[in-house]
Image (tube, rainbow, N blue to C red; front, side):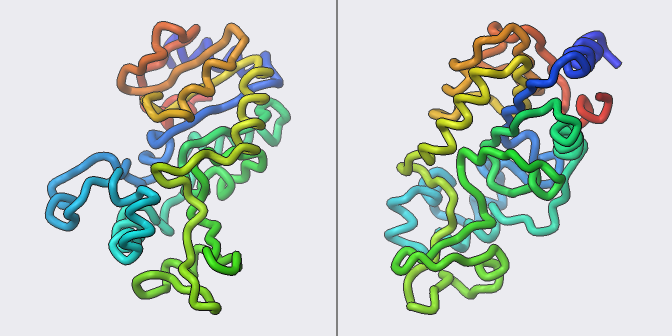
Length: 238
């Protein structure tokens, strides 16, 4: 165990007001790839970049192509929680962790047992008819051919925040409050370049800002503790 991980472990042991803010790197260790990583296979299958396909405009214009990408690249029903998810749920159960704030949409934090999860970008597990508002589970989306349709014939849309759409006001407000009041703020698996989510860090007022990410972030100089390791490996030692 490195000195940095030892320090983090000590901070966790001495705090009962921890907040975790996580990004795609938390899920990649569960086998869910970052959809922004454009690989050769992607280039062969799609005519548009990911940011275009998962925009509100594209969804409205070509829902069939949207869902082809969405089902292929953004839904992983076999994914399981990893060491990070599991440890965070344990810390919450122990009364140490107040909330998980995540940019991920996969629901793995809840699957691991976390209860207070702020899903900034929504979730694949909630879907709603754009016409009548009827709700649908993920299984309905997965098992639908092409564009999922409601019993009223309306198009069913995932409650995922697409490009050009705003974040949920209540989720943002609660996230700000958790971050502002936190003693220890742990940030992991995120490049901190996706806004407005990354901007929430500006509300932290404490002196135990922990950054766990393999690559540099714009906030590295602000960190009180910087750990350039895989997040799952770090949490497996805590």
